[in-house]
Length: 160
Image (tube, rainbow, N blue to C red):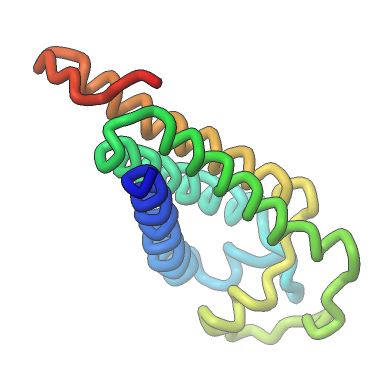
């Protein structure tokens, strides 16, 4: 049981460790005008696309590493559930009350930290992201399983 828990925790930490710097780099590369709609903190379609791809890649990496560490399919499934549930938990406050601390109009220069705190995503993407993350974890685990049972004949991954 401990190896499963350990691999889920490490897989989740990998996802978080990849999301923060990749989103920061994407924001710096795209710039404020490509990330936000003019004069507001509403994210653009381009930002939604980039952040979705980056989140999926991070989830795939987390699922892959979770499968490598655990050598089972149970742990990545547990990680997928954790990613899905925590994603929903983080999305729920957007339904309950809007954040009045976010200014209605943004200035021309917005730093990375302010952008993270003030970005307003559509509700639908906030609830789609947990599903995308869970699917990414399962895909990453499947990549590991296929790779380990493929050409090398390494059968160390138990299909439980």
